[in-house]
Image 1 (tube, rainbow over the protein chains, first blue to last red):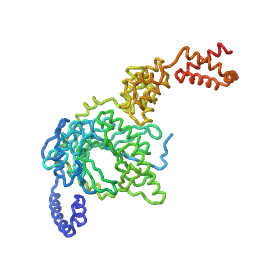
Image 2: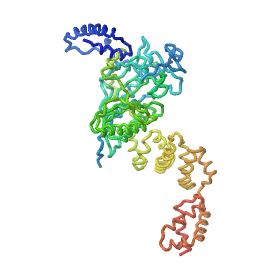
Image 3: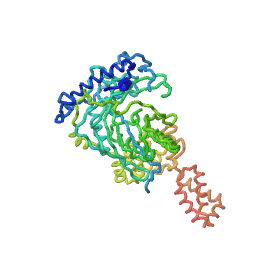
Image 4: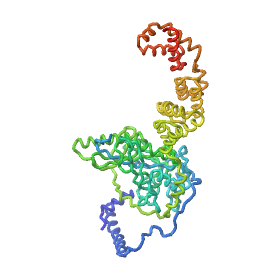
Length: 93
Length: 476
Ligand SMILES: [Zn+2]
């Protein structure tokens, strides 16, 4: 069972504000999801290697050769606020 | 002598090293040459983590990582992969950092440093590859920030994070470890320490078996030593008051030389590491032999070679090889003049004058050093004159020959010195008498008078000989 406090902590990790009422609702919904994974847990996988990647590929590299980057204007176009070529955010820490 | 470590200091370091000799970032083709560029001009969809982009690993970055592992006497992993370390902070536009987790590319190595009581081994726990976040600039101090500016040019640069065991017993040992590590990395040609932000350090420190604190945001080797000294003092004061040191993360404020508590609510499991689905695993064990063959000469090997090839003493060999630029400079000079003289002039004189002025070897040319040594060896100028030329070049510029002419540094010989010796003996009968009475010191006084008359351009040792000869011949 997921608690309201856990939901609030997860919200904080993602920097998403979750109000009290929603927190109760998410707690019960997320618990349902976890219960479903609980069912998967019952399957015996002791002889199965973990699958990190579905494609059976290894060693994909590129050479150390520069390519053009985007224009500064294009990078800044997505930003809410800019200042002298920088992206500006509210005070953090 | 065994170092007692009276306060039971244990220091472990985590060093983030930018592989800034690469031409491109870790997972995209953006150029690493951004240090003099406008902000946010070396950025692409991969660095910004835009939807639909696909990171592809820089092969040379992996080779560099293995090179570093070999130089630090590490085991190289057979197969490894990348993970996502999830945290939400504006320096990482993706919301996670691509890093290594359960299988670091190299582990279990060691570095031998000059410790408090002779050679001291610092064990390397692991070193893993990861991407550098963007650079944040706080408007105002970190505690009273009014806003933050972000430059993503650094975002995605290849980093190696080297983690040591807590084997250092004093801030000085920590600094020596950092110096040695920097030197090794520069010899490996994977890293240029002169670029801003190229090496950043976090330090774990505890005293007397108590809980440790982690100090972040250390950007220089001097800063590391200061931050650690401060932190030891702070922890000792806490213990003296009968309280316990709290395990926490602290931020080093370089300007004020203090560490400040940073409350973090994130714990290790909050990072929710999981394998990076956009990057496939790599199997690189078979690369090791080839990379080992091309490993360049490392500082300790070069130091031994300097002793055997050039016949210099160990203190000179150590001083010359502790910075690859100085070592290269020396070998160029030594190929043109007597290597033994070159060792003395470069390590004792030039390095001292540079340190005094907080300059690097880049402030002096091989040609000038060669010319000055030639002038001394051929007896055209005195050693004192040579030092004067070096100082003059560093302070005001100019070429050795111009300075020699301008300052009249050409050594005077023969008749002029003869005459000065005669004059001094004639003008100082009392000193001569004292000398005959057994006062060795008055001979020094007489030699000094000759040097004065020749304005320091005579060679003191030969003046002394001439003086004794003259006394024997005409005054006994
Ligand atoms: Zn990029």
